[in-house]
Image 1 (spheres, rainbow, N blue to C red):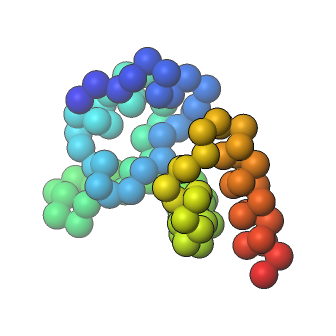
Image 2: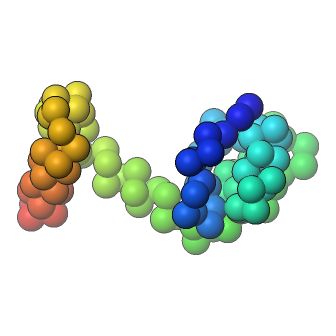
Length: 99
């Protein structure tokens, strides 16, 4: 499994869920001197150690993006330019924050 050249450019770690728990994927991340914060699946015989703090941060981000998906224009990415999309995303984020 190949990672893109730009995938981990400025990152210190790659944070993902159990669906990305693959030895080949983790080795590809570690070959680029990055940490793989991916919890092991329940059937794994040798579970990998995961930084709990970083894993909880991923959960907070996912909980933030869940309500954003209810806004159709954000979810379907109808905006033509990235500037307009980011403006719409900031507006929806402010609406959710003000609830």
